[in-house]
Image (cartoon, rainbow, N blue to C red):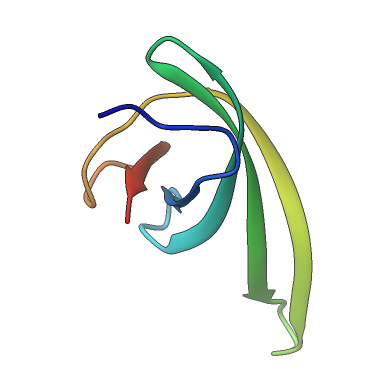
Length: 70
């Protein structure tokens, strides 16, 4: 079972947070992702944004810097 462009996945951040992401490219075992963020700044105000990550491999829920199919 492969992944496809447009599929929703979780990106596992380095702080172990699960962030919503959409696959925008597939190249063998690697995917390119748009990751959606909603993180609090030092004043406690949420900052919303997007990050782009390239050549990400599938991992498990404990492995930062990877994605997990949900």
